[in-house]
Length: 505
Ligand code: NAD
Image (cartoon, rainbow, N blue to C red):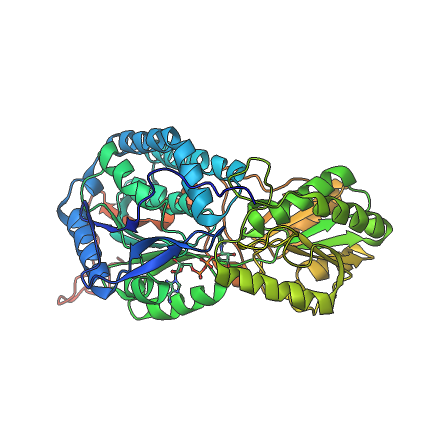
């Protein structure tokens, strides 16, 4: 294998950022961070414990209660958000190489992440400036209006797939609406998150508004979830983790937004533009190394085109370029961490007992080290198979035939998840009806996964709780206080007098 690319000036130790300063854990605890190509430790990161979360929350709380951020005019905050976006864009190349190095994502796919992250800040800068709230009038009697207020310290807990971009999804609306935040990024991939601190400080975000605590989920994440001064938790990650967090947050009744796992169907009818469907189905499950929450990891194909589709899909899967994530020719890179590699590899073995292996099936030839799995295709997979039901989160796909539209729908809905669905057909009536009946938070018709930032993002069933995106994010991160004013005379029942019951309120 060619020499592995290592970005220049990588930190050897990654710290927290609390109250405007880079700091270590109070206890001095740290953990190792590996790169997924060599699986060697390239840095240590401070491992946040309860006392570090306490310090970060105290700083965020102080910045919320006494600092200027929540009280700024939307235009002032928007200017800062746009500066953040400019800085993110300006660092696109650096960010992409760091992200690729830390996560194993192919460099060509990491490049788009910075632009998308920047776009999130611009989008919410625009939204808060254009924001208006309801005022309702009962002529001559009452005016009611909505007073929209930031809520307080938002706890943001994020996963390791496209970490920087996913962090921006939460940071942008949380900060835009005037909250202060504590971000707990995923422990597998803390590298790019460390860039936020300087980006925010240079853009003019006051100290204490943005705080970052690295660490393990069960320690730092858990302390954040349980902290009484953190009224909001926005979490993206696995469904099982989401359930744990939900239970742990119950004691303090927090606002929760949960973006969880998926096992999304890609449904291809015989009348579809098969070339377009093929391109999309391949990209849908093998882009981002298959480590994508909205991956179309179950492909359902109508019987008349089933054999042809399987053959063409497998032939293309076999020619996908797997290799060093920094090589611009690479289409599938290295999985994020040896633990995750082990999990995906075990599903490949399970798949061999559950379906007909058409491509891949383990480590690609010539890549004996690193977390590489060849794009793996199983056909004739039955709906009760584990590889049909369980999220694998790697380059592994299950293909299943169907005979009727009803059967396709039953198969599509036959998992506990409900994040995304992709439908390919030339019959528009069928497409719209199928979308309506699919248990998924998001449906793409004759399209791969492209999303307008104004649309709701989120899943149903075990894929999530609540939708973010556009105004829904503004709603999540703000409280809509209702203010009521009486116009004219106040009609109050006169308790303590004889005519107490005679006047309606
Ligand atoms: P994960 O659940 O293991 O970890 C996510 C985050 O939660 C990490 O920061 C982790 O440290 C933290 N965490 C773990 N245990 C915790 C606890 N007890 N209390 C508080 N925090 C805790 O998920 P992952 O493996 O990092 O990410 C992959 C998963 O994320 C997949 O299931 C994928 O589908 C999902 N995902 C969903 C979306 C979406 O929008 N629906 C987007 C991306 C990823």
